[in-house]
Length: 152
Image (cartoon, rainbow, N blue to C red):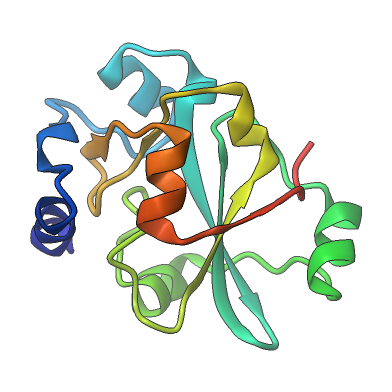
C-alpha cells in the first residue's frame, strides 16, 4: 500500500495535518461516509479507467455515476473501468484506497464537475481505511487535475 508515499506527498505540500486514519474500513463510499461522519456526496471517489492513451482516474462526488455519453464526448472512446486486478498495478493504490495523488506517473487525473456541489471533500489516501480532507481548490492544486463533466 502507498500510505507512506501519500503521507510524504501530503507532508511535502503542507497537508499532512489533513490526513485521517479511520478506525474502520472506508473502502466504499458508504463506509467512508460513516467513518468520517459526513454525507456520501463529500466522499471524493476515484474511478479508474483504461484508455487508448493509457490509464486515467476521474475523481467524482461519492453519489455520482458515470454518464457513458458524456464520457465518450470527452475522451472519444467508450468508458472501460479498470478491472479489479488492474487497479493496483496501474494506479499504485489498492482497490478501496485509490487516491488522486501519489499515483503511478503515467496516470492522468481528471476532476468531475459533480464535486463542485461539495466543499470540502474526502478522497482516499492510499489504503482502504484512510482519507484526507481537502477543499476543491486544494484538491485541484494537489492533483493538477483538469475539470471535466462526465457524471450524472
